[in-house]
Length: 196
Image 1 (spheres, rainbow, N blue to C red):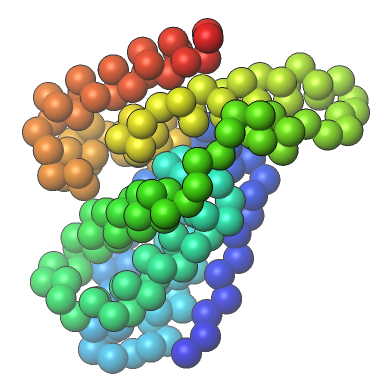
Image 2: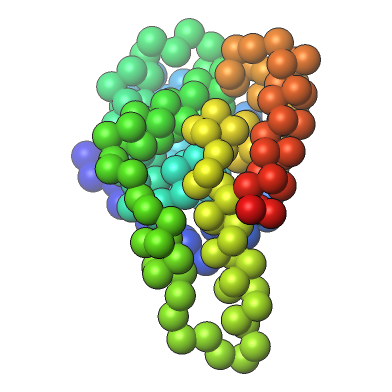
């Protein structure tokens, strides 16, 4: 089976939340169909979750190609392990963990990127007075790269994906108080990294 994954990159690093990976009843029905062997349901599942999965992956990885690889790996894992998912309503949490774990795995395998390379990639011809915005975006990306994977993950879940503290606690399987403190600490470290 071949399913084309298309990744829209426009505005992906802008930090605008588009909501968590879809939790609708339709997704639950697609999961049930896929568990029963209906491969066509996989295409529907991809269509319903792909954009949010990419946004989450990008918020963790901060790299378009790595994010694409991680999300594709996550969908392969879904196909291979969907029957092990006992509660189809828990698909969102399960899939979110898979995407995060795939991103972290690929980040560990990737050679560290220097901040100079990041700045060079972010620069280019700028028109219509966008230089200031491009400069802020580069500074933000540099600041995000200074954070740990854990900080980028928690900020991605909260600020990019728009998950509640309760949902993040469930996804990461940690107490809600820990989530709140990690979000607050990650925000503080991001501000400090941005000001450097």
